[in-house]
Length: 427
Image 1: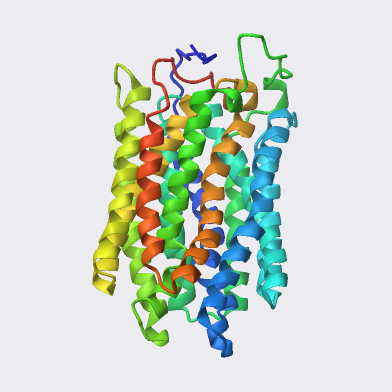
Image 2: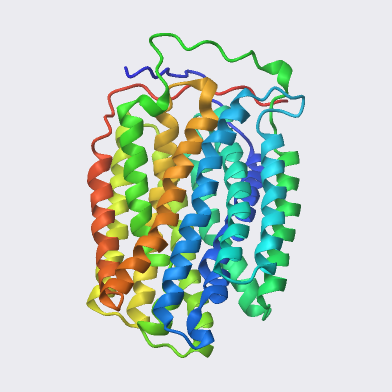
């Protein structure tokens, strides 16, 4: 049975919980992905300084990857501390508030920074803050839900795509310079991130017993082979996604040869297309994964693998015709595949948890698998672009890695009962 414990009590939340949870994730994704997609490449574009454009791609990859790796460590570490927190304000709320405020400070520092080293150092602060808040919010899915895990995961993943549109759209449509743009993002996470953390229910200390010593029959999730296979497959699929999305501005400028005055508008168009399909696919897939089934783990495994295959098709489309029109088609396909994948794979991972005393730590590892892929992607992708002096290898690798991730998903067994018991939410 792999140490998993079935929960027979269905735990549900109402529309207000889902709305607050979605807004919290919307704020997080907006402040993390807007710099990654637009502001950091603009800060690091060496072509605007009269240098070779490939150097700017490489610097962007280094800053996004190295700067974010520190944040990746913060996720499971803060999750572990969150699991052990016994305050009257709850286990998750203090960490969600602290992470949001730290991210706001980091965004202000990033906007003030000049040069790749200073920008990378400031970006570390943002990444740590975002990772801490993510770990706290993700743990709420396992803490408070059973039958709605797919829907909550869909809310988090669809907010990812909407967050890019909100952030990039605000910067482009309002004509904001880099410094005002970072100030706007800092205000968003400080107000919305902290506000939703305060309003979301979180059981106070007296409703929790001290963590029990793990019995011999209950192993940690990170030692469970099925959980590990899912973590690795999520890493691979997210690298594939990052190959297809993180260097889009450079691809428009130097691959499709879009004039620089039009590149930001075209990037916004691609992001909107991507977002529409992410939102639709994540909601539909999340709801499908929540439907009653004889073997819900098998249903989620199948949906996870199929979604990764759909993502792979997008890379093939750009390889066949690297034009703006076909890139728009690829953005739609990528959005559909990735939106469904992230919604269902997160719910799948929640079902595979083995230890209810370590929800935040273990789901922090699940977040890390996605974040690490999104951070390694720009670095590795920049190397592929520099290697061939173009983008064909980048999109070919995106398709291959997505397919590999789909195959790896089937290494996860579906014969064990799902999920650990959630803790009660305060009335």
